[in-house]
Length: 302
Image (cartoon, rainbow, N blue to C red; front, side):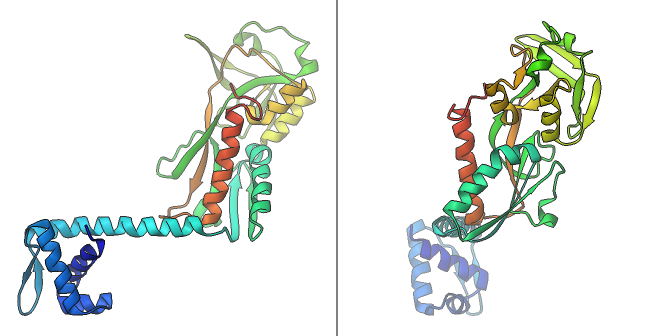
């Protein structure tokens, strides 16, 4: 099927005449008329009713016209995507990310991105508050946890686990064989979370809910980590933040046979049909970094 013929036919229906369609397309009326006639011959049905004053689509023509618009739009989108894919990132890339994941995972990717695409400047905003992308002028946001708004244009790029941890010295002060044994121990509450004290543990079919008692409450996840590392007590922290601490022995994973809820890592975008190269290339690099972690390249999350 010749896509040009679809475009000529759609232009005639939209304009209501061969003459006006030809003017819009920048070609002669004879070419438009000839190509539409060949299209009718190809599909084996009459698509247009021609009168001296106006051209009207038949019932089949109206249905076909609607389909043509979809096909032509998809073709235009495909060409636009190819053009954007071939373009080098330029301008300023504005990213929003939470403090913890942003510091541990996004900053290294931003550094690599800036080295690879020096013509593109990056502005990274770190904070645990949810930023409105449109009013904040952000190109992309990284969100960690559970998305509450399903209307967002989002893509899950990874997952993370949560661990109950404490400092190595603090771990020697108590014995815990069951999640309920943790309830009375000193706990550093992360006030950036919706439910900083209530935790659901699972092991096979066994599930237990434990309400911790906060001795310290902090509203920034990296500061919670610092408090736990200093021996202030237990807390629940994401794997991407404590992976190196656990490997170095500075932190201890408490009750590792019990699992806490896992969450997602998402890229979230403002409403748009296409993503500029600066966004698509950055997200590709972030996804590659996440896949490397999950495959064991920089420590497993299992």
